[in-house]
Length: 382
Image (cartoon, rainbow, N blue to C red; front, side, top):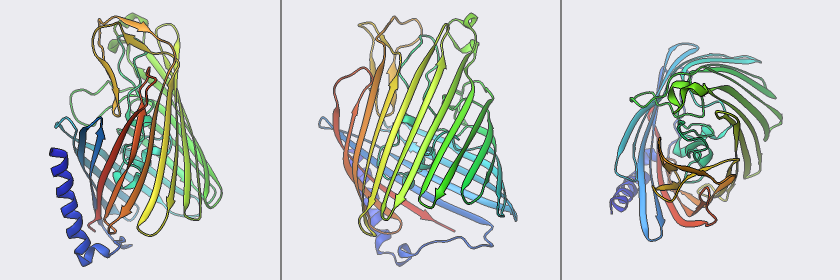
């Protein structure tokens, strides 16, 4: 019932916004603007096996131009999860220097989006054409070594980084030093942050012609210190991530793919994990669009608890187990997430989305089916 009340409240906001003449305006920043800010509020729900769950996210982004080429950006995010718990964090806090020209240069430092792949660009709900975020960036991988921290292919949280990007009409390059591995969630605030572990990250892309871009990215470094694992004498754990992406647009159709491969050290060997996400968006009219996304994750090795304990997978990750538990190795495994969504733009600020959502957990042969819906309100203040 809480989910239903939340959606009704946001529908009410949407109706008010649609009837407000100002809602039909497009807000473009003036070239002399010193301050800019926008807000994205989203509510999503999932109906599965007759049960409902959902959450609400308040996502704010503000910028201050302190000099002609120097900006400060901040992005606080407050979320209410499906279990009624709240989370507040500062996802982005950075300073950016931009030099225009035929070959453009941008240098930025602070908490920045992950440099691996293109899906981190959809971290805000108004940029995501479907409802559930890409699981390759949100979901934890299943345990592949007992007594080690949980890892992801890449984290949705913004790592501390210093990054330089240069670009021209047909190419772009970037290099960054990260304060922690993209494979670990390291929030800006809170006491559950893993130790800092400097990483090197590189990336770039080519645009042969307008509408097509091909990109690649790379990072390498420690994802767990020896002090974090159950047997410190086995040493640190290193991770290497590769990403490849392609984005093609023609007419009113856009198709893009994102592939991430991770190699994670264990005490005596390593484990490989991959994710392939394919997304297609078709604009039918100024108000209507259709979108579909499929994401398949694999791991070359997976541990599962023996007969007791609780170990389960959901859209947000793989849970269960802990130090001292007994595990059995079940070998390679894969997971699948599928979405098919119809979107309707009620006004420039408000978008409704609804459609099918299905997933198959790691180590399972059954595809679970559900109905997902969301309301997104995105407004630029100045």
